[in-house]
Amino acid sequence: MKDNAMKPSRIPASRRRARSQGGWEILQFGLYAMFMVPLFLFTFINGMNLLRMIQIIQICRDLGNEYIHGVDFSTYEAQNVSARLAQGYGLQIGNSFTSNGTTCTTSNCATNDGNSGNGYVVLSEVLYVGNGVCSSLPAGTTCTNQNKYVFMQRLDFGNKSLQINGVTVASALGNPSATINSSGWVQNYITDSGAVAPNFGNFWQTQFTDGQVAYVVETFFSSPDLSFSAYPGGGIYSRTFF
Image: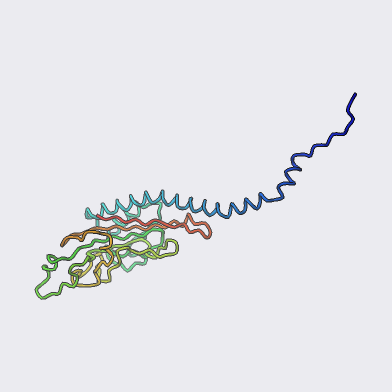
């Protein structure tokens, strides 16, 4: 004999899910995305800059190696080599010293820094002035910069107005205000207080010996191609001492 009792009908699974959901997943996803999207952008930008940093450190070292071996970076030819080393990173030096709006009218230019682009290079030769260096002055001349670090040479090229995250780049060593010739040599570096490198000693635990010289290369490269709306692309600063 068949059981004619009515059995309860099954509710479709889609309707059961609809009763329990009520749109909360959309709200949860929106809240989750508010935190995860910025984190993803931050990770991507910094990851790409980390990869670039490895290459830019090598560029900085290559320039320093050329600098300590006598390459004259006040010449257009040497600066052009630098631009080729930094190919792909936007270091611009113009077509020539006389055609890119610089104040240089000779074959040497210590301040070819009025260019556009995403790169800026600063080279410095720094000397520690002790008693021995002071003794080279004529009798009766005051050794103004005794027991101080001074710039003997300063060269820069590229884009001096370059900004990284809205901040204009600048040498960590400070900038000389003494007279500098077209080849970058600082005039009267022993007696002119404007030749002092105010921040150089901060990088050393041990003071230099009398007459000791250091060569410093600083490179700045911004990453505007990595910028996303309100998230700046940042950039890379590299410094090498020789």
